Image (cartoon, rainbow, N blue to C red):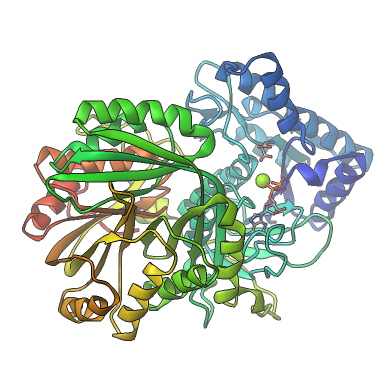
Amino acid sequence: MALIVQKFGGTSVADSDKILAAARRAIQAHNRGDRVLMVVSARGHTTDELVALAKEITETPPAREMDMLLSTGEQVSVALMAMAIESLGVPAISFTGAQIGLVTDSFHTRARIRNISTERMLQALGEGKIVIVAGFQGVDENYNITTLGRGGSDTTAVALAAVLGADGCEIYTDVDGVYTTDPRVVPEARKIDRISYDEMLELASLGAGVMHSRSIEFAKKYGVPIHVRSSFSDAPGTWIVDEESARRAGAVVTGAALAKDEARITILGVPDRPGVVHGIFRTIGASHLVVDMIVQNVATSGKTEVSFTVAKGDLAETLRAAESAARECGASGVTHDADVAKVSVVGLGMRTGTGVATAMFEAIAKAGFNIQMITTSEIKISVLVRRSEAVAALRAVHEAFRLDRGTVEESPFVPRRSDTLMDLVPLVEASGDGQPPRTLGMEDLVIGGVELDESQARITLFHVPDRPGYAAKVFRAIADAGVFVDMIVQNVGAAGDSILSFTVPRESAERAVEAVRPTSSHEIAVEPAMAKLSVIGVGMRTHTGVATRMFAALAERGINVNLINTSEVRINVGTDVDRGREGLECLQRAFALTRDNARPL
Ligand code: ADP
Ligand code: ASP
Ligand code: MG
């Protein structure tokens, strides 16, 4: 007898007809003999309306009371759903987060799940009932109601599937799957049949609102297959599964995403010495702000610029933290731009495929847009552009990778639960250096390993003009020379121009420089050998603490960081090649990894 979790989003329970339709779907599975647990969101725009109502009373509602308010939306839905199911003749019971013992930390409005007791749910399922749980909510140790962050019902659903050992988690929503990009923004987008956890994690955290990114962390860690599908049709949707099951021939890029409401913050004239970056992110990380696109320039005359992006809504709070960090480290100032958006492409094939960066930059150049910042990871490239140009840039990129011409799979896909990382890797609690181990919360950061790569060289171009087409020209020349590029970072420089750095295999460094020289009359610096240190885990970007801890450990040893890039599954930094081994050892110690358990995830 299978156990399945079915999650219904806001539009899928917007009115009584839709609630009854969702109820029938659950009953269908129940009648097949499955045990069914439903997770339900607030109806329609309820959560938005509650937020607006609070803002009518005060601009700064206390976070605890916000959670008290927002959790009511889901409570209405579960009660109505239980009534609907009972009215159709099947026994059902609804629970709030507190009633099933879904315990979180105390970070109101962005709480993380610590543990869930399964007893009450299993008992009700054992009695043949359909169990309906309110999404998005829990309680902290003191029974204060908490919520998991907007869109968090997905995370409730996958977390329940994980603790109950369910066979799968079905996400019923208003689209019939995960598309190559948001179909509301680019109508030519195509449905993806299968996508790996890592790709979905990146897409979700880079702006694809179809799934809450933390739900994919759960799915990956606990091996839960997810089926995203329409609540209004029986069409097969998209499977989010392990890498082996997701592998498809051909495409290098799987999808593209847009994060429209971003803001850039740049700290100018940062002294280039060990520990400074750490100081900056410690101050910012203390506020639990999620920071992305962290970019640091190669220093000129002992000073450098550090830029990063945050959600526009977090700008004011982040600026306060950045200004105090700048004062502390003796930087010359802080600038920001609240008018930017991030366009990204994601695909497993990028690990080995070449030319993705070139094609992306060329598409944006052809559309006539300037790229302000660039960051990459093994499976994604993100660029920062003006907000007003972002949708057109996304379209251009989507078309350039022919994402509008995908084929849809004919044969049905049969998923299986994948191995869980929670068994495979001795997971390390990652919150306190050298402190006695603490029981791991379900959403605590897990670190799988630390790596050192000494095989690369770094090339830097200074005074890159701030106009469309430059990055495209540089990477076209490098691609034509047949050189594989790994990390790319471009940051805004102090003089309103940019600095562009990238890494290539050591043996290709000269070839790359020769290829680039004719494209620019600008100063080029080559670091013929460098060390790349990586910390590997799951959900690295949302756990701001991990970057802070990494920078702290390196700073303590006086190891200077001169290049940073981050993704959901790893944080990479560049350092001097002769400090690489030492850096590796100090990171292993900082993350309490011994040689035996320092296995990559
Ligand atoms: P629910 O209320 O069911 O959780 P959401 O609004 O959170 O639904 O998510 C579904 C929406 O996500 C879609 O209507 C679509 O506009 C948006 N979306 C963004 N990116 C994508 C994508 N890559 N594929 C599918 N939908 C996407
Ligand atoms: N109702 C919550 C929200 O609108 C949670 C969710 O729908 O996932 O953000
Ligand atoms: Mg949602």
